[in-house]
Length: 202
Image (cartoon, rainbow, N blue to C red):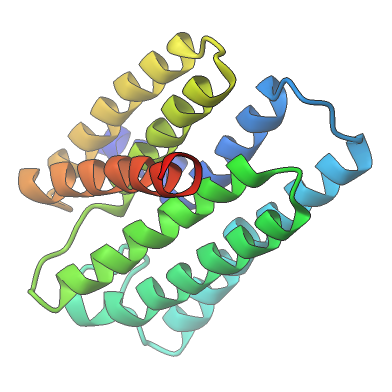
């Protein structure tokens, strides 16, 4: 049980956008000036990691959520909308930079995922944001690999294995049902494919 809790905390959903950005810059074949790269990473870190942590602390302080896991349907609604807004703001900022269009799609994919998860809430259906986060990263890496024709199979395989470990930890903690775990992963994975197809193929 302690190991499952550690895994859930260590691999929290807010970690995966910045992980995706690091991998993107690590393997991106096109040159980009380092100051630009560092600025982009800093903005992503602040927008998708530091700000959400502060926001959740405020919500907890004012008892708008009972726990950081946001167990109930109602307490998930507002944070989900906020995370949707953050993702689309970061995506729009990146797309305007024009040099990192593909990275912007990672955040548009997460935007679609959050929006769908928000709609699910009105049907009394939660999804696992842990599996959604890593599912979205895997979907992005597949699109990234296809787009630049680079071999990221080791990374993709690693994150698939990690997704299984995270899923098991969520189930062991009784944080989600098997349906919620699969729904989160598949929704986010497919969202990345949809966004990539709309932007580059259709």
